[in-house]
Length: 193
Image (cartoon, helix red, strand yellow):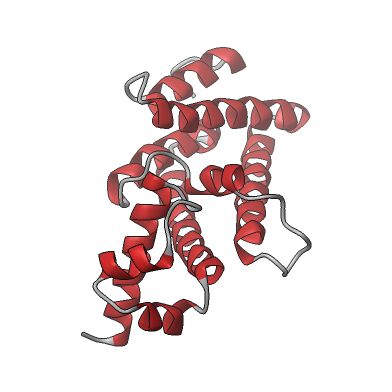
């Protein structure tokens, strides 16, 4: 097995365990066992449990951004580009390994706030996910209506967060689709344009 294959197995195992059983509840020995490697090998690849979590989050963030980019690029107009976050959520869930819900919200809920930038890579990645989400939604919303950009972005973000929480609960079915339709209604956007 190559070094990259070993690394992928470690990250896959950690992602699955961290976000289905909990970060605090999952020890590195359990991750190493699930990946079929020794704890020494795991540490050689990630340095620590915090390093492992950061590597998993970085991979998720990179994957999320790529899927969202695809969905924004495929959207036919400015309103659809704003709502593409919901299409991206559904597409990302379909393509990535199963987790209970959002890896970033799960991390934020299990760990205290970052001590300071650069001191907690996982916390910095949670912050980067939040900043990227808010910033991009505001940019896309400004293309629709610059005067309402913040309102549009905040409405979509609120519904996006609700869709993520619905993934944890398991209801309703298709929370991303429901959230998109609710956003359309709340923003006064019909199906066209």
